[in-house]
Length: 162
Image 1 (tube, rainbow, N blue to C red):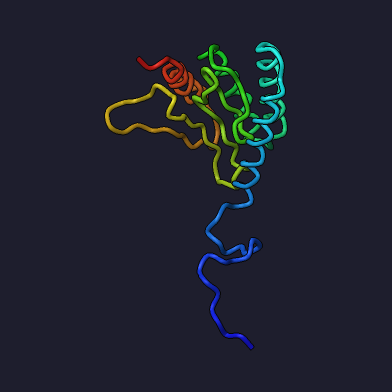
Image 2: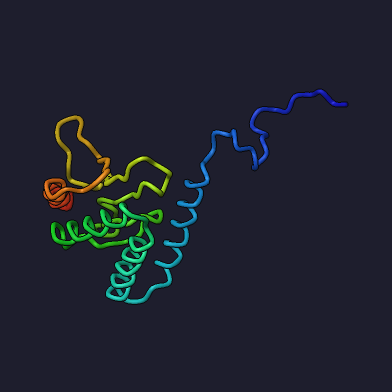
């Protein structure tokens, strides 16, 4: 019988107590790899834009309520507020990009088994305000006032920095 201790960091891949990535995080990374492969295979810019928007709409259609309804409304808000942002999938989430770089995104509550959905902004968003500003908003539902506020934020975020 060998009572020797295992060296640190030798936990088996099936060890669920490890502090590594969750199943949801690994799934998101796999989705991102698929997105990158699909993007590399596409043809013209117009074809790519149409395929990207179709992929976003398909991903939204897969969502459960109430996230699906919020995602549909947010898609419309983003497209109306910043038509220059291109819809695309980003880690399996609907996102909107300027020059290929994600500016904002929607994450359903089911994505990482969270108690609320989020609408977030990347570092590409032109939202800098002093030394601290919000970069993500929790959403339990979406009111008309919320849509107006998000629309204004997206419009501002989409402006090129300079």
